[in-house]
Length: 434
Image (cartoon, rainbow, N blue to C red):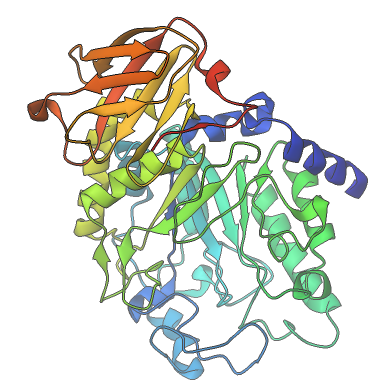
């Protein structure tokens, strides 16, 4: 089985995602919801990192808001999110235009948000008691959303983690993964979260772990954090890269997904519910999604529900605003590839067949001038309607959108060609433009 995984991963590294049936839905989706939630929401400080662990393994620096272990480890005794409604979360993700949801089944702090027979430290032993993973995944599927499991290989609560005899913790980890991948139906994405070079092979035997995932869930896609961002082992590089809290650069030879928090805080966290958090602006969110799509990547945007089980109104409001934007401009995002113009700070482009979608963040006062194309431009239109004047010659394409029709956040244009947009790339790479 390990050999087959290695061969598969090598294949995914060399072929376009558009011809890989396992990844096709994911690259078409472009937009997903990340959810970080557990009993840490009671403290309103950063998930797991607020645990002032006594073990030196993995833990360094100053966590975001210390909650001493004796306190943090007992927060679950007061955790009763009686306002949690999985249907509301799934409805919100769908309304935002998201196509998949990735949920923290277990973060670094070791608390299981699913019913695990292998640990008493979990949601089943709270006053709430319900299986969050089951309810959420069922609700997502009703809304035609794909589902993903986030599972941290680290565990700062489990006593065998980091011990000299790694076999006990390895058995625990493999057992919990087996529960998650056999008790909850089809899982579409496996999202690991590793760092600490060398630990991945020593403490959790990442090669065996990845083989188990593929054996239990054929067709699943796995991120690049099963080991230390691949650990230089091809079979562990996974199916897609995961730039964190930043927009990925253009990359169309290997799939990628920027994971970013909707909420920002001074210390750079904000993954879970933070009392000091503020949502990113509407403009920042729209441009982040467009930048990922024009860079040929996805955006996995994170929310942090509060201790009652509700996604705070300032976060949900922002997501609904994004959904309203996608209702108009979704065809320039979903099912597209990045290019043929290379994206940059002022915008970028996506394409499908013979249509190029321009996302222009900062429209030049004199109008937009793009590099020359081999195809003839037949028409330029605003995506929300209305033809736009343009001119084309051997030097390039000039497009002039009247100031009154420009969008201060993102002016989206569709350019119709007489040839395939993919043929405009130079050796498969985009043309410098933005």
